[in-house]
Image 1 (cartoon, rainbow, N blue to C red):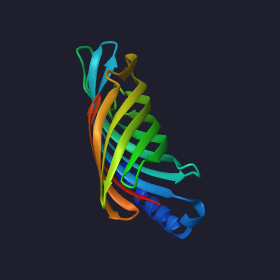
Image 2: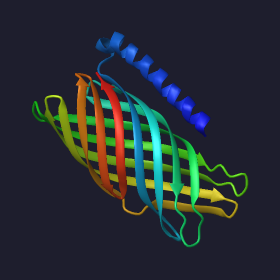
Image 3: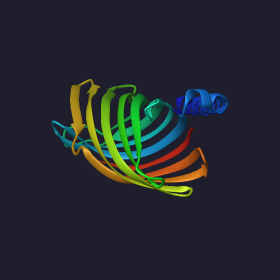
Length: 223
């Protein structure tokens, strides 16, 4: 698991540098383009037939995006996660690690020089496995989310309160069979803080609560 994590980090750093160099050379021809690295620590309540269980997820992802002529940004990403699904009265606690890929659409509607509205649709597929030699288990789930927020910008600082809706559909398979799960509470809310280190580069810190809670640390560059 540690080796795969290191390889993924190296891939992110190499791809990010390559993408950034490409954008510096060609951004005037291709329109606005973005690249980011995202670190996340998330807790979520998942509902099984036997009851609600807590999932604790740590992840790292690399994303790229292109902006169309209508200011709609189309992006995708790959990532690695390790997680723990707490056991209930009829299940054991499980630990998994795995990979995921995602696709997203992001729309910004500028209201004034300082304010704008943001919409984000995200879809991801996650696939993982535990590291036991016996009683092996696999986990996979799809996640679709819709997020709406309002941004206020002050010089090199931005703040965005937002609300999000999540739809999760997945299952865990082991020697005893397969159990399905979904989100217990699909609604979350939070706030984002953007610190601009350059006109096109920023560090984003996100705090989120509700059905899916936790935090994100994001390093991004957008042209």
